[in-house]
Length: 312
Figure 1: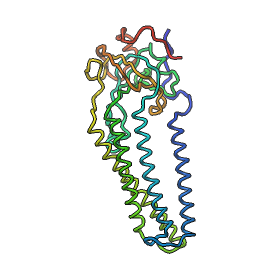
Figure 2 (figure 1 turned 90 degrees about the vertical axis):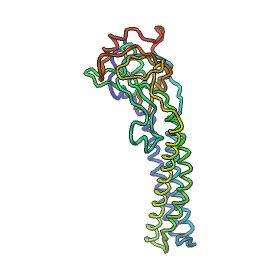
Figure 3 (figure 1 turned 180 degrees about the vertical axis):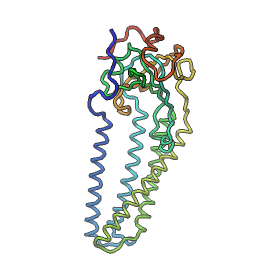
Figure 4 (figure 1 turned 180 degrees about the horizontal axis):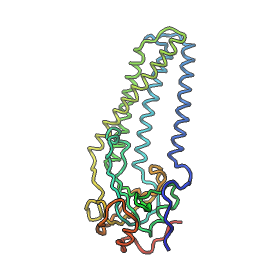
């Protein structure tokens, strides 16, 4: 007996890890800003040795601001690289259905500007009723097609070498750019020439720190862009293919085998990260958005083993 149709959208299973990561990041940023402002206030009140028109501690604070901004960029790029290149443990399983959508890597303008955020090639499959248990088990979100009944979808990621290469290249570029950005940020910030004491000195020094931080962050991002593009260009970027090597098309009936996980990158939905084997079974005469009744009726025999059990 097949499972009941999963409810589309949020499953009320709680927040994904990425939401908590964002909250913790915001707390850290608030604490950092408060600490820097407090340090600037203290430095402005207590230091007297001038360097390039700014007190010695002031130059140090400009450098600290530039370094913090550059590190923020490096850590952000590194976090994407770790996520994109990871191979988390999941459920080694199998499912089949009809291809409803294909999203290739680097398909957005933002992916070209920030190559480290690009996602692997993705094929969205409206799955047969037999595999609904895979869609909803432990999922925090269920994606569905835009048909009248909301047919459940499993998003299938195909490991794309160019994505990981771009992320790694961007990390290296961000580190190199960040180092240069810190140096340039300190020079430009110090060149503003804040001098004296009191409120004017405080606000001038704060402005110098902000400018130094912006410069360091921008140069680090430029380094990430250059490094990411070099990494992308050096790697292959093939389209998703079936086992025979043919490109997958909209409307194809396919069986996918691979590692099924709950992914925070996809709102806590069940996704294949990654597909290891794809079998083609012909093509539907219909067009997106597909209903599950299409593969239920027309894909009676797929390539999944008949003895697999639903996950506990």
